[in-house]
Length: 229
Ligand code: CTP
Ligand code: CA
Image (cartoon, rainbow, N blue to C red):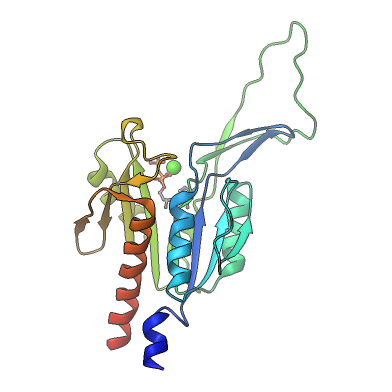
């Protein structure tokens, strides 16, 4: 039993990972989106599943293949992502790596918006999307015992991430600098800082897959320590 547990040390643990961008429709043929590739979240789901966690990946639109051994639920919008996450509970650990669109378009256009000769250009009014990480973090029933968020920042990375962890109510925040010059958005590498309730850990520049493996090991350590007490 121990040898088996050694190979699959997260066996018995359920994990939920969000990943990718969301697409927020403007009309049936247009949408608002962002530059997220989904790579980091897919790599995290892969790493957790490899360690034996029963893993659900709720993914916005990406070009990535479903990771082996992971249950993928594909969604388009932030509201669909939240619903799919809620339907996946309870889990032991939730990792919110999705680049959820902060706003959606406040229209219900069932037909393509047309250019009318002489008419003014359309104005898009935006409304705020639900915050999936904050919603999961603040659950009173079914709150995962470990909730991990990401903080994509372009300046004052640590300061913003520390404030973000407290505001969202999650346990850990993986903070990363997504300034254009870092190439993180859509790229293969990531420099992250792990912000916990107790402090901060700086990780070196690593391939996204290595960031994912390291995070999965940290999650394993969390559950191993918990089970010792
Ligand atoms: N997040 C989420 N739902 C949202 C917005 C963000 O679940 N509607 C999650 C992301 O998956 C990430 C964390 O919250 O884990 C932080 O996302 P980020 O965009 O950095 O934070 P925001 O609170 O949206 O703040 P801002 O974009 O203004 O920096
Ligand atoms: Ca945001």
